Image (tube, rainbow, N blue to C red; front, side):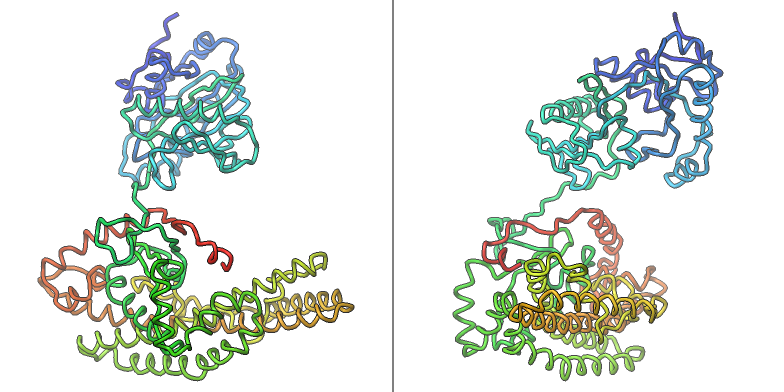
Length: 619
């Protein structure tokens, strides 16, 4: 029987019918005609009053799935995923009528209209309705022909769960995750264990065929596995796919295009821990340089010399090599020992080994003195410099503003060296305490390192006005409006929990005096340095409101009647361009801002390469 004009068989549809039947049905009809395993179905055209008996004659005795199919749906820049209703397991005339009405009504919902408006899409809001035979799958899910996180086009990423794929699509099921590359399948996450390796390869092969059919455009494919056969339920172009980029750092000191590095690099190491986004041009070119100058000053003051740790900027993201350049270590150490007359050796030994083994000895040998130097000298000098700058910034000349930023940035770098050495030791001390607790107090209720380091006296809770989400000065500091104090009741609860845990640990060790003494020593030093770390970190960004105001004042100086823009444009210039602006240099701001926004969408790896054996043992 030939369906009426209000109903079109899926097998009769091509991509040319998209405006009439919607993108989803046009894609599936085209795939079905090309021999892909698509369940049969029909499309109820927009506005039509269909003969439901006719639908059931085309799909006799079937359980049905009723879904939307709009012309603006399943596009590369507008998937409309989750905006329209899908009704599953529909049986009988009344249920079918209700399902079609529900799907049509969802096109007029406020949610769908807002989604369309945000993407500049208009239209009446009507949709065609796709009715298909509903499968009874053992497993179902989605497959992406490019990694949606990294953008890699040589991987198919499959998510699979038991039963219906709606559990995965809607997010109610995490599912298993498989990655297929070059015909080899690897299970990256096993939650429900629903696929064999061969089935994952088969699903990936189907996804690649779909991608090829649609002009090699990366696809987001929904699939289902029924009685061992893979069915194709939906295919659409992937949206918001990140750019494919190379995350291999250059060889330190090598010219552009030279041999690539094989070192070990971290994104959240040293200053990178404070950079949650790619860097803006002015921060990278100016403040980062002053911070690193100060960091070297602090190292030289403490050790008598400087050992360089290479950094790299990849697509705007900061990376630091987690150790000196391997081939340079012997030479740098020999030079450092001679230059510092041996003073460097205790610092390196402490930083790399002693704190991990005997934090109490590291405290007495070196760290206690460095902590006092921070408290008595570094912090007051930093505070005084910032206070003087705050009183002068609004009346300073451009030349004075440049000098002010140089001075504050370099002083903050010196401060950061102390935070890295003294405050950074707190993590190693916490690790020592954690190992002791696991080994000797594993069965003691409340014996938790995090509890033992809570509610410590001297830690000021709440958010200071100079707190930052990133040390890139493009971002405003949190400001006074973010200030919030922790209630006395909550603090009292944390203190009570800690004291209860301490008492339980000591009772458990009452008949083991050597271990009791070791616990007390580890606990005391870990708690003291946890307090120091929090206090040091709290004051590190004290100068950031002043630094940002100085840049904005320089940016305001760029603006006149002939130079449209904003003071914030200064963050997308270099220091030299800010000091000597030209119309051509200012014209580059828009492009750089767009490039920075593109870099922000990249998923930057946390680490590159593999840690050396010694470093891995100490981390």
